[in-house]
Amino acid sequence: MKRILFILLCLPLLHACGKPAADDYFPLDEGLRWEYRVSVEQPHHSEIRPFSIENVGEATFKGAATSVRRTSDGTDYYISRRDDGLYRIAKRTLVELAPQPDALPRMVLPLPTAQSKGKTWSLVTMPYLIERVYEGGHNLYAQGLRFPMTYTVVGVDETVAVPAGSFSHCVLVEGQAELTLYADPRTGDSQIQVTTREWYAPGVGLVKLERDEPLDTDVYKGGKMTLELIKFR
Image (cartoon, rainbow, N blue to C red):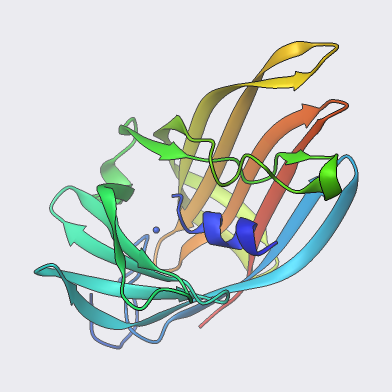
């Protein structure tokens, strides 16, 4: 599960303390905290776990002003605000003494977000859920398999309901990718349509995320992951 939580903030993620602006879809104010419920459904098992994110303050990384967001698994993500969008430029895990730069800045959301319908960008991602059911069910691909995903802002006035409440005027970002892998000796290679859907509420940020990796063969199992906001403060 730690692997899932680590990847979650790779998807795709500067101000003083205070209330986030009503038109801010990715608030970076220090002290803000999000608590989520993560549900995983796979052919061979399911689970529900808590997950949280907290803005811990500002930092300078390689001359760039950033805000640091810390997850409940102890990973720090460094977010930089630029004229055209919010970008993740580095991360630091629990076992690293210093943040490690991303090879290329990773766009989290375009700016201005509410006027970005139709905006498209591409990022390299990796499987969240695909596991090899032999050899203990370990995910052998998570550490090595990479593939490009195309993200598009498909809606800017969506409504979504989660345990924290109903949120309107949300921005919806969809990611699409096609992954080819050797599924099993019977079927050979399989093409999998991997999809991601992310809802961002104004003044709150990410309220829901869905990741679908549909795969059910003798050797590999995919599944679906849903992240929903429980509390924001």
